[in-house]
Length: 598
Image 1 (spheres, helix red, strand yellow):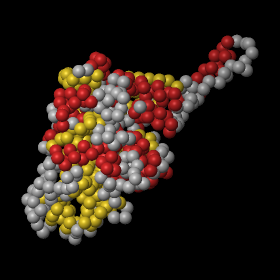
Image 2: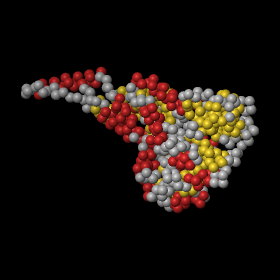
Image 3: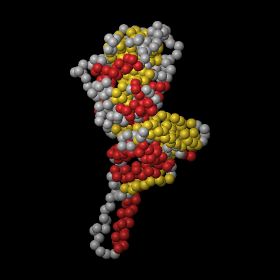
Image 4: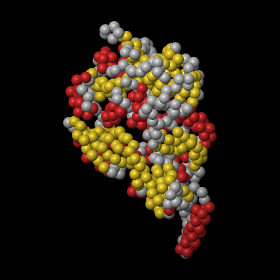
């Protein structure tokens, strides 16, 4: 056990975690030169294209130290984006130490600080790494000051590296062996193993990634999942190298995989504790948390005959991604679809792209919303995330919405516009912490629903890309949320209804009305497009009708002849409006909803 090291790599998004992992794998001989490619541990195409990690991944590496001792290094690469922080949490539970990466040119950013606190919560030893020292803008001294001032770590322990060129990688490996602790645990105690990840293999079922905390697990053992309360028999276990390497057993302190005939990720719970049926542990490993969906949106197929394909596609994605939830939904305008729950906007974006790319399904996605808690006048309590289920306003006593504590790191010169941006998005309180020369942290409490649309994009624009944003859900607070309906020719269009704070209702309604007025083709009669709250119209656009010049055939004569023809036309238009129906093309929905997300 003294020759094992279990560690994660944590950092802000785009600070070089996956590149450092590639160099460590290459240096330890975990991959041949022929097999080497960028982002070795990122298995999805979308991860490679966007340069982000979505799923944490693990690999076991053999390392021979300069003194000749052989070590087994279990490396867990983690995502950097705030939406996938539950992946980071589970990975930290599985490790004994962590490499915390700071970008030599950008310094400490919001997610670096958030991940530091997560690591401290799990009592991990930390080894700071200063990456990207090959960049012309790299400033190692400033990064060391930030490591001491903002992270509270020893700046002289920080190892300067360039993951891109390979400079300093040997020093990192020596630092892992020297500075990070070996695992602890009794191989003879009752089995306790943490499932920190899982993925689906179409030939073998679910392959579980686990860290054995106590005891020993062998093939053919019957195991019990303590939270899910299910039993399975182990068919195979071993180490994760670039290929699965079967072993006869996994003992305390080791990280590996288990194949146990599990058919779907939804049959088990990631973060669960495994024990043996015939010698069970007294209690599960502490720290288990379920992934919380915070953003909800309805997904409809672009063409109704793709509904069955969409159903199968979502089921396949849910097999791999336990954090995705979905239930059936329907709309008068768009037909059948699904109401889905996501961890955040990036998660929604990734699922949308995977559906379109992997399954070739055109989608219409409704405006995302959060979950509101309502108290009705008869004392009932409801949780509503779908505008279709919003009760009659007369029956509502009070509404609460989820609030977040947002941490925004920004250069000093941008602090004024950043605070103004927070105020525009209904921020309740703002405090400023001075972190280092030229860098500030703005801490703001604001509604989660305000962050969903354009907040992140505006923040990047204001700070020229140097601002970073992280948040933690805190509580539900009282609010004045209303349901806005969009009426086309006095008929409500259910898909375009949305929930919003009363102060923001008119702006959004106007945006919807103007977009629809542009996209709906003209008819023979005038079409009003209105945004309404209950019976009150708050926004309106009008689509002008086609007009035929019925007086063109007249050549002189009394003016009453013209008036008679125009009156006749007016009556015809009124009759048409009464009985005519408006065709809303699919592209009108797409343009309104996509523009809202952009």
